[in-house]
Picture 1 (tube, chains in turn brown, orange):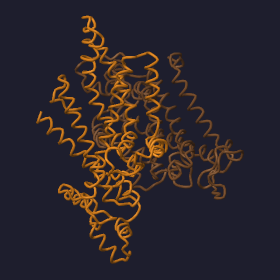
Picture 2 (cartoon, one colour):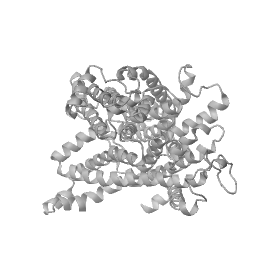
Picture 3 (cartoon, rainbow over the protein chains, first blue to last red):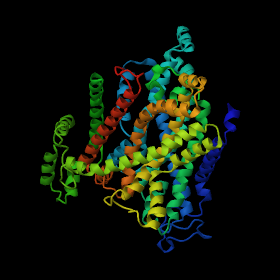
Picture 4 (spheres, each protein chain N blue to C red):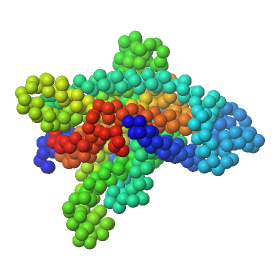
Length: 289
Length: 314
């Protein structure tokens, strides 16, 4: 398995891209030539030069510095949301799927409600009602996203718990907690890893989109989507102001997508990434693409 | 068929009730007093008497469950309250903005299908070749570009230099719809083409294709007559998955192109803390999304004889 994935050039490209972005943004305080926040109007809209490698923005702040710090914000918040939704979604899915009953019924009703909505719209409305700000974006995205994990994990558990190794463990008197921890969790993790990797790309997009709309990062804090929003009045005369953060977002999301795509080829359990197979499952086809 | 339809429609009721109730609770715990916000938005002086009157008008002196029931009763009659900013009925504001959004969504859908159907089919046919890998890479890149960035790129490098495509707003005929539709449909097309490719490949593995091959039918006949027709079934179902992204995308695209649709109305309402409009928007989107999925579900059930109408879940 390891050798197969390392032979996939697109996966490797994604890995390198993500490592680059991580190193560059996490080392922002070391790499950045300036302070990201102080405004200096005399130095506004400077072209790239020795002092400012990428020039300055409309408020005279170093573009490179803000790009590095902005990426930190985007990545930190994306990862935080991901950790929260995995930590909530996976246990809930495990317990609901294995124990069934009331917990399961409640979960499925909740999932119906949340999944009945376009994710971005729900996140937009929740952030909008709570008020603009990155913390509220984090809360909104976590609220609308964890259910997907719970539902996928629950679905996997439903089929796993009929498998012989689980039945054997049960017959041997293993407690439900023991079965969930020792037998179910290891089996649901690989698809969750794929899902999480692909999800990171989507979270980066969601956070930068909400920031672009003015609901996420608030000025003067740098964030890629917010930087593009600030650049809107200058797109014709100073297109570099939006080109750098825009390309940075696309580069990062592409990196995560390449990683996820490569991982899926190796780890993919069919039923997880191709949900529609169930919808006409009576045909009984075993896909082997 | 009718029985199935009724059953499906009935399951929608708790979903819509749930979503609107959650929005209600969120608005209730959100910072700011709606009565005060309304007075501020309408430039009415905030005095204790005015506050009291506003509270009464909004029904804020009643407990939350009762307020929700009142709102529901109004909603059933098509009355969603009045906008804090304009004082107009929310229903009228939404309806006046709806055609623009429908137009945009339709445009985005056309772009998506026009790009994705040929690309997905070609990628499946060229499976494993350089062309397929290029297609995969293109799709991944396409899905990675945020739509707001793509929209600004189109404005900067196509609309402004050529000067014959209107950059902002609606109303100059179909030409004004081109860039917004492209912005909306492009990223969706990338994802959709990949899904289509995967589906076609799966269909090509099926027994009836193998037997068609064994019978010595030409590959073009197999693809055209057998595989594509079968792949179209999940393609219709997949529309349901992309529909949510399409609706979500309209918000962003409307903002960039100053498109006067409901998405823009909603974003403005969010910044003004115009709660009745937000609430109305949530209801509209819930209804729209749920009904689109129902339509899709029905149509693929009609396409695929294997699926019995009685089956509960879709």
